[in-house]
Image (cartoon, rainbow, N blue to C red; front, side):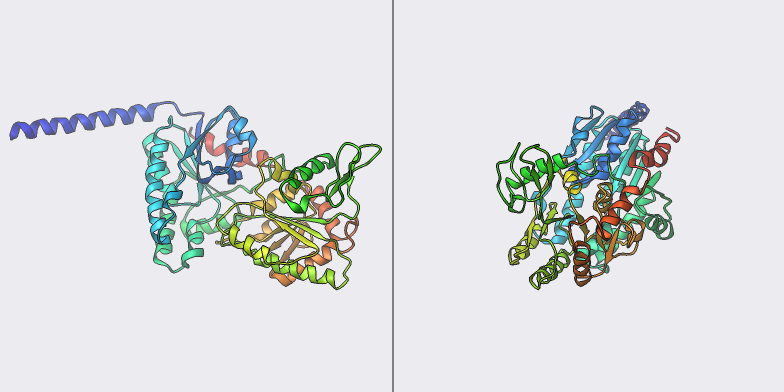
Length: 465
């Protein structure tokens, strides 16, 4: 027995020595110049993290972009030779049973899945993690960084526990447990980024976490769309979506007219269609933190005003995005009987979305923020396209939307309906607030993403690397 015990002890010692050797070898391996960007979500719907990856690649870093490939990332990411996509397996099979059980199982499976995916990578100098979700991402990324002796940077977009509270309520034990874990694990990071000054202050006051604010900025491809590209986009969308089909089908010049643009019969020049409808655009993940019944009720008020003789244009309302509540809201939309408003809810490719924003007349944002501390990326993109917005009010929105300067802020559907009628009165005249808001956006000069990123994130990567 003694011999067996001695042999076992020797085997354990050898295993420990081997593990220590592997640890030292892994930790001593190269890593400067490699960064892992982690998204426990759909990469295609995580524009900020894609921008991080592109900025890292621009500075010569090899980037492993890890997440779920449910939607196609932007072409710039796919074409970049320094960015390697590391897909995680979709967990749709876990979406059965009670929601509480689904959540617990998803966290457990994601923890194993993420750890295995990370440890298969070459050692990076840094892991840049999107939060939320904080569970299990922060703890797993911290464990991997501890193994690698790498830095962990958390980019705080919101709080995961506040999103969880939309389903279970703020006082639910699961929400309270998630809140405690998120705040505790958040302190394990080496550096932190956040999206607003309000969140930076909250992280310090309630979590003792120091963060640097990096405002979302539109990528370079978010800009006003030239008429020729508008025409091409509308004809493309008209193949599948009735609201984009031609008001009058004319075989003129180099192509047909659309509801919004037409081709001059003699010169072949593209121009805005006469008597065209106004194009209203919104985007969403179709989740609980955006109540689209507010927009639908406002549109009912707008329709009623037209029927009573108000001189307002007809509307085409495009709501883009994917998400769990899309079928629910599509059901509500199908129950509406508008004569002067058409609504469609397409999913657009990453390259088409900025073209749509750059062609629109007004954007609408119904993002309310589960924490009240983050800002809607959709408005950032709209402003990049010089597209004025009407946005629903919440606490830190004035950090982005300046009421009566680059858009309007509303509190309910009745106020939104009045704003729509006021902005579109006399459309498409180049007078009035809608035009002045657009001119203000054109005149405003703010640092772009690349400049802000270089000033904010690059020093964190270079510090003690």
